[in-house]
Image (cartoon, rainbow, N blue to C red; front, top):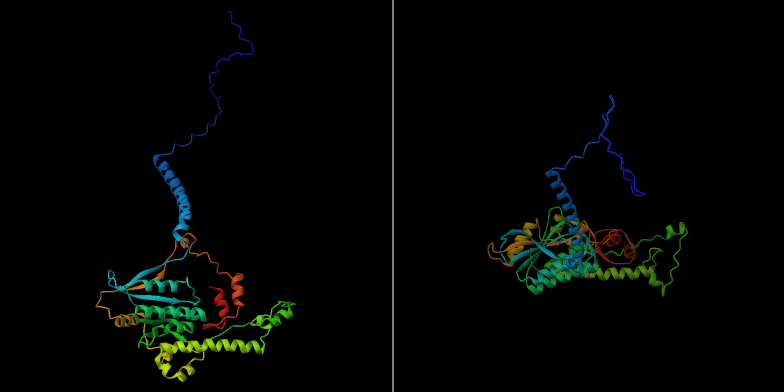
Amino acid sequence: MSTTPLPEGTSQPQPAVAPQPAPSGVSYYYPPSPPRRGFWGKLFLTIFVMAVGGSFFLNLILLAVSASLLGDGTPRVQEKFVSHDKNAEDKVVILPIEGIILESEDGFIKRAIDTAMKDDHVKAVVLRVDSPGGSVSGSDYIYHHLRQLAETKKIPIVVSMGSIAASGGYYVSMAVGHESNTIFAEPTCFTGSIGVIIPHYNVAEFMEEHGLADDSIASHDLKKMGSITKAMTSDEKDIFEALVKDSFKQFKEVIHSGRSEFEKNPEKLNALATGQIYSAVQAKKNGLIDDIGYLEKAVDRAIELAQLDGKKFKVVRYKQETGLGSILLGGQSGKSESLDLKALLEMTTPKAYYLASWLPGLASAAK
């Protein structure tokens, strides 16, 4: 049988090999085919991928638009309905003053006062004070704007003291003016602490023991007054005492404007203004407050003074809006509460406080 020769470089085709049966007693392993994913499995996988991907892109979108939504990052003042007619327009506002008073023009309390000032339906304000006080300037700043609110809008201000309304907390409470029966304190409230303090800490001995020295260069010795690195001189002490006396005098004048009893009898106030804290019972006995009662009692008095008609009004509480930035950052406003350099400098800066505390510098640093 003749065959045709193949072109050069072409391999001879091999005959097909028929599969041979396995020898007796020998078995072969064939890996199983991967199971085919059913309809529900595919659906679950699709939903999972879409959810993860959607969440990722949604977060990107939120982060991208947060700057425009937040504006300057200042939370707005919101209203929370408390009682009476939810659909009414006229309102009694509960304005909380809580914690250390270290207020500025962009703080919540000032923004709340501005909100009330612009709202023609605000007919009365109830200050819910739960504060041990704060800086002299911060307390006076709030007091000034509260009085401006009351006088401009011709509306009553009533105070409800919570667990503590001491020093600067008592100072801002004087925004009620001379209207009678307007300051209420809860039975367990601490109030009073009428006085001023400029903190000073002397670590000179510690520095000497550890080989530390203050080589600061100043234009005058008094430029370093209040420094924690040295003992206070008699001249420095006289200067600070004069500052304290001026602030103390202002404190008592503000109390005269809010408690006519003391305006008529200054010596009675002088006997009480020792920095002592008083219980609600003691405060009422000494004329520092009008009555003992809870928030509802103060609200009822505000309604009475505003002469609101029946139930055609609502009681609302001002609260600070939770901004988108706070949500995205897990409730953080972006301000560190650690004792950073700025806080350290504040702690060592001579500053006067209306505060029921022996360590006001640290209170300032933690704001």
